[in-house]
Amino acid sequence: MSDESLQEKKTFSYEEARAILPLVRRVTEDAYRQVEALQGEVDAGRLEIAVAQQRADAVIASWVESIRAEGVEVKGAWLVDFDNGSGYYCWRHPEPGLEFYHSYEEGFRGRMRIQ
Image 1 (tube, rainbow, N blue to C red):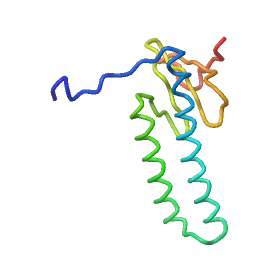
Image 2: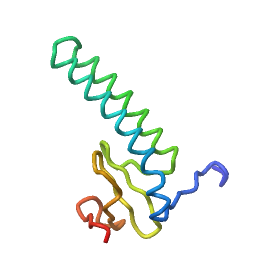
Image 3: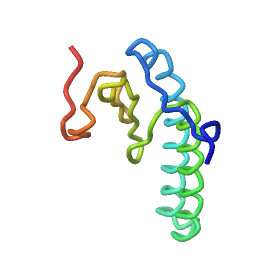
């Protein structure tokens, strides 16, 4: 594999992460609502669980691709991290803003509020 084919890992300053967060929130909210609507269709008996799961998987895969295209890391369902070079600024839907940080070692459980 050549160096050119390796995607360079993107790092964000806090200001850069905050600037891209509205896009991340919009894409995440859209995907979240689509998945919730599928669940509503299942609950109402209008859609089979297997079909809904397949569609939800496609929505989530598209969401992951969109988030990663911005250089942001997906860490779980509706959970993203912005690498800052020494750890991550961490955001999870539906948090209103970029309010948490955690080290590379600690992960989500080690989140601390940004002062």
